[in-house]
Image (tube, rainbow, N blue to C red; front, side, top):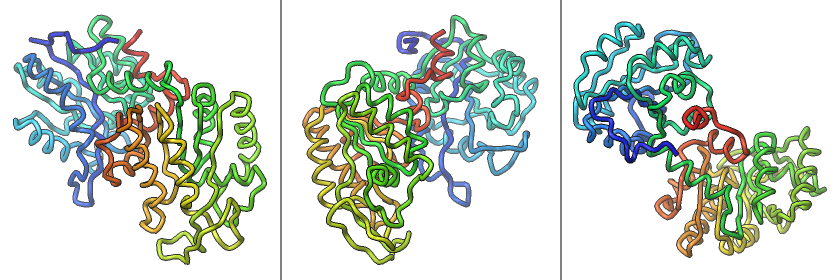
Length: 397
């Protein structure tokens, strides 16, 4: 693995791609700087080497091409300056020739943050000529943006070809890959994967790939109702994907063929409408009556899932098992978080990934008890699906 650990970048200008796509409030204030904190070890290593750093990042999804004030990295620049306790170079300049002029004057330990890299239409097209011009700003390239590693964009992949002997993974990327490989390459058994969320369609590949390596697969969230419907249970008014009932049956058969045990909810917390203040009831078994929809897993299901998780040596969690954003239906998801934390304390290796799962583990208060929390939902999923990530391939080639 092309790590920066034992490489000196003294006297070099380093082009560093990070994931600073952080949430902000209506006044443009950063509400969660976790992604920025996770890039600090790489930045601090480069500063300790007396390198100068040119940081590339995206923010939101600008579509017009050119500068869009609501997607400017200016709030990020201010926050980064505070985190580093030093003045950084930032402007909303998009002319690469003028940026190159500024870069040529950078001294050791200077930090420059470029404006939102997606303001350039060439970025998302993987434009080679743009990549070449961008590469001329630096002497080395480091990709530390795992959250964007599944994108074949200029700053995440294309640019690497212009640094054949000076391209590396940052510490965050390195850590992500090491931990994901623990899940895929000879995981300690039993291996349990908890897959939740709303759509079967978005999890088909990961379920099929996990069936080859996992001993148990727990399915929760809205996608569980598609599986229960496929098995002939009544799901009332619960959300499900009618056009994926056949797919659900095929996944069930595939799991059987690979001797992977499937666990679905055996009771539910149900509501008469999708509302935190709805009329709430509990079911005795898998079936949900008409006029009600499944909103969370019930106590029997929590007990069942807990037994499976606590008997596991490797645990993957991707996707909540209920509508945890509503307090009335958060118990199941937070119970899963607690159980994974307990299993980890007993020696299991646990991995959590995906925006909602990461949010749930942080809100549950158990994030410090998890072995590994991924910074990249989409990238993590694609890696576990067995796909090659462009941002990884570009460095390893």
